[in-house]
Image 1: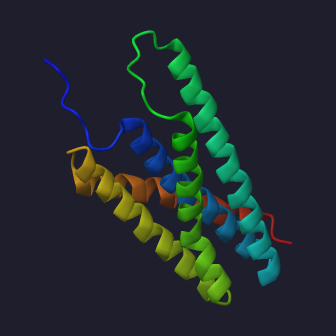
Image 2: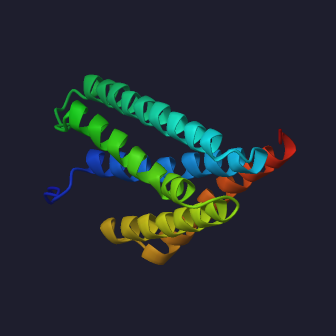
Amino acid sequence: MQDQPRSLHEDYLRALLFGLQDGIVSTTGVVVGISTGVSDKAIIILAALVAVSVEASSMAAGQYTSEKAVHQMDRTGRHTDSLLLGSLIMFLAYLAGGSFSIVPTVLIDQPLARLVAVASSFVGLFAIGYLKGVLVEGKPLRSAIELFVIGGLATALGLVVGRVLKV
């Protein structure tokens, strides 16, 4: 049986979902951890912007090199995705994910900003998980809860480290 054509290339979908999820989780962990450990808003924003910029670039490079390896191993020619487009999707998705916690941190003073950043990130994780469940014809609610729990654990770790290492 022949595969049905898909409207969204699976490699691009993977880059999009992975970038969004990791951008939300990693950046929220940084924002929560730093904002728990220090009270200076400028330091919190600087740390968040440095982290999201470096991590988005790193994730895009990782997307490129890992997909290139897959392309090089594939002798069937099944992989028709653009390595550059996949990397760009990863980069932009990561930045977009990071904005869920950075925007409240810029706009609102602490400690309320930390709470809004976490709430915004959790809503984002839930929505992205639900969307993934719809797109892959799975169980959207289960997918949403799964992503919510994963993000919650990473955020809790950031909070604990921030509290323990508070300066």
